[in-house]
Image (tube, rainbow, N blue to C red):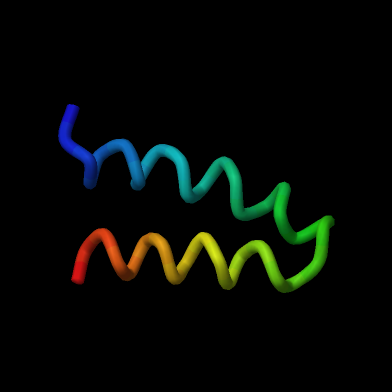
Length: 38
């Protein structure tokens, strides 16, 4: 599997969980996602 396909599987499953922990973690995940792609 490529890294992109792994992210596409990880992001939708983890973001809903992070919403319960506040708004900080999603920002970290998104920043990591952006750093991987760009």
